[in-house]
Length: 431
Image 1 (tube, helix red, strand yellow):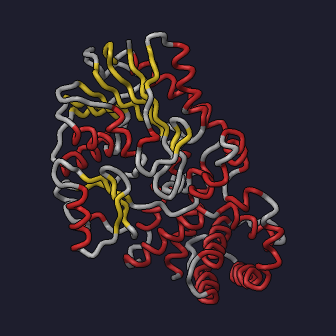
Image 2 (image 1 turned 60 degrees about the horizontal axis):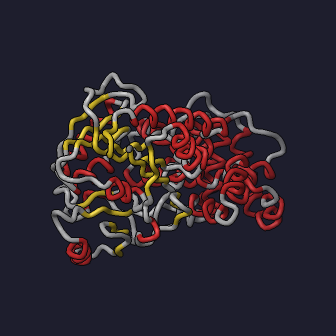
């Protein structure tokens, strides 16, 4: 267990210093070549869990420390161990003993002798005093909900009826939802295939199936053959809403990792251009399309510029723009602690630039689907309202989200639930 604790502690420390979790975790794991697959999996669970509940954990830690810790590695190790004691099923005393041993295994500079005693004392005090500390810890909303206060305040103001449910949904483990390529197999036939493989699942949407328990994709029947893909149910709405018809010239801007690109191409034979500013991420799009046996013209370029564009207008544009990703925080738990309030305004400025630029590339009568995986209105409805004021040739079309299976929404905003993440959609037509 101590190896998993060590990997998670180093990872958590890096994230809290400003680094991305999906970058930090594999880098830290590479420093422990002796770790077994089980230990690496355990480290992943501990890293995500500790960051998911960091607001609560940090509040307990403040109560248990006489003064702030200057050694960030020891602090991160305590954060991981406190997560285990509060939320994990591991034996309490094993967690404590392994955490104390992990202190001695920290790499240079070696911790001083007091560190073992401190870790032991803090964790054992938590076990003794947890019931007494609950009231003190829950006196702040940051500790109760494990989000920054600015985030909580924003949702309170923008979603007065839903803010608590949204915060709660963001702290849950995300579901594993599949998209069935119904050109290759019907949804009901795929459900029967899962039953034959003793995989429990249920239908969520027209092409969506949610697994009762997540599993490695390579164990999914038909995955390598492109029969099924992993995609959040909320994200699966994008391709149908774009309303593509065979032969259309279509642009998927900011396309990586390519889930929506593939879905659009599954719906019709198209002249598809897939654009992304990151060449490495574009290679992932190619890999996904290869598995699905689909093709697109891949281009590296900035959706907010035109140097990549050949001048021909598009019939449909999917503008899945960069955003705070506040609607998919349960999948990217580090976002809560890496984002700052000022980032919302910065993303909104970038989105406005991209949206206005792509609009020039849309043919008359064409449709542009504006998409974010955010729940902040500055990036969503307010962004679209401002765009409509600037562009007299744009009309906002109704989406009909009320007719979708198992979708919780407020106007064009998907509210995160146990079945889907938080997305925003706006369909704009040029006239």
